[in-house]
Image (tube, rainbow, N blue to C red; front, top):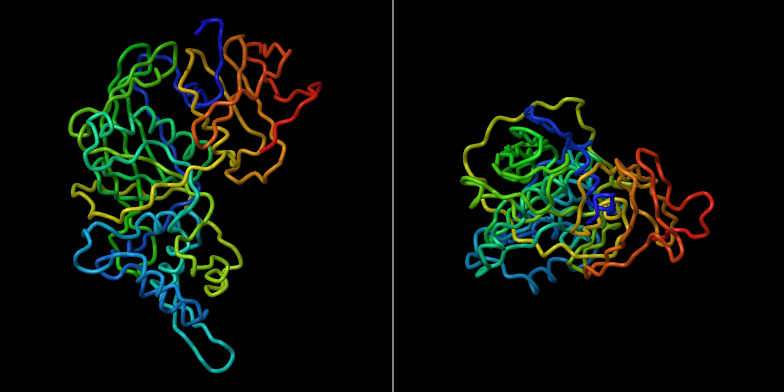
Length: 409
């Protein structure tokens, strides 16, 4: 890469945020909402059959029959398998049920829906969500290199992009081995011994919401986990791929991270709109967050194993989050700030125009790429015959006012 500034759109958003210097560096961010705690519905105990039996009674559908025909349940199922991935996604995307509801059919039949019933129905709506995923799930027999994924610098990038930039929580699998323990993370902190060029040691702290609660629990039971890692700075930027877990974090660190953005039930008998109507929700909404939630105490014990999710489904780029997180696997050593016109965490409709604003620390050439769900790269900018030149410290809009092209989802 030329030092004159070949600026690549993608992870540069976060790399520009670390200023050079010899003083200790500290970075904190918190999402705009705190997820809620819920039960993880272990398959040994029947999974979601309890809540779905009431769903069937109210709707006339056959969700329980599908569960029994398509899932292994009972004492022979591994103790950690269940639906923590579905609870975690629903706690990010849905309003927390806080009181018992009574359903009536208008002909005298009434059905009490406990808080746990309602949370279970919401979890059933999120068993197969469309999601953006970062890092690869470790499977039995995987290599040591696979066990070290997700690398700490990559995790830092994702946390910064979603929690700081987007103000939305993420789901993190905190178990590096073949088991999967999903928890929604809403805040993080990185403390480093410096931010100047060279190697550095850092501590990463994650605040997440726990699922070790009874089904009818209301609120957010918080836990905190801490990890250590090292990385390298060069020219005011974190060197891509330089992160390594250290100490006990080499064997105990997050495995992969994902962000659900489209509800999807694996069970075809579970209809999202029917559940929303049954629970009296016109539409999902975030739980209000206090301005300054208390920092939780350190949790020294490991969490109980959570459920095993389906691997998050890869999908084409349709959200501002995905547009801002294109992985081009290259970087440069000067600041580059990139924003998308509607950087609010919402979803773009297919065919909706997109504009990008870029401010670079050095003059150079800008290249924007699209990455599809198979990892294939497509050059979006500059178009043929366009120089793609940008000036230092000057905001550049793409497309510009005189350009004869547009970007669309």
